Length: 115
Length: 116
Image 1 (cartoon, rainbow over the protein chains, first blue to last red):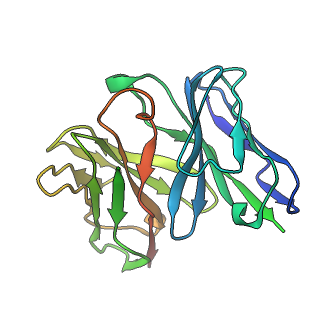
Image 2 (cartoon, rainbow over the protein chains, first blue to last red):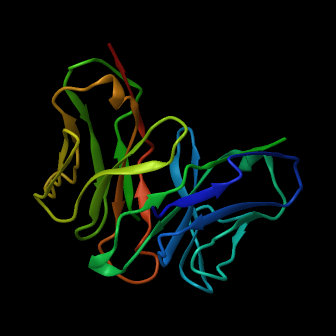
């Protein structure tokens, strides 16, 4: 079965370190998204991509970057981790465009703690 | 911009009680509306959706009707079970096409606990 896999599931890092969270999907979806989930804020969009070599900033993109070198992967990098980036991170994907757009499929999340 | 407002939780109900979780939205045109559910330790799963006014989405006994006149998409279930305990998110996707229109805008989530 197709799926979307995030790794690691849990990560503890120190302030100032670079961290990369992996997202791999086997749906062959062209659209991929990164969200962060925080109590009292729900899910907020960090970055998104509509295809290979395409990346776009979301609502809370400062301090994060992504790259899309193939269809399956959209890694999220925290260039210099800050305590404010302690959160649960979700990757999601969808296919199609316009009226043919499919719902989002989510990974199980990565819980990141920055100490 | 687009926004989604959900009722504050947590909500605690007894098994077989009636559930309503309110959701209202702000958006231009006719967005698509969704309810997602998140079980502990898992990602979000699509529960139901509606893409035009007066559409009713339904799944697993849950229902929600797209009300354009009140900009609402309230989630209901006639008889909840312990297994329905989860966090529920209302979300919208903008009606316009082009860059930036494929992502979802989420509400803050409502935690539901159902006790036997």
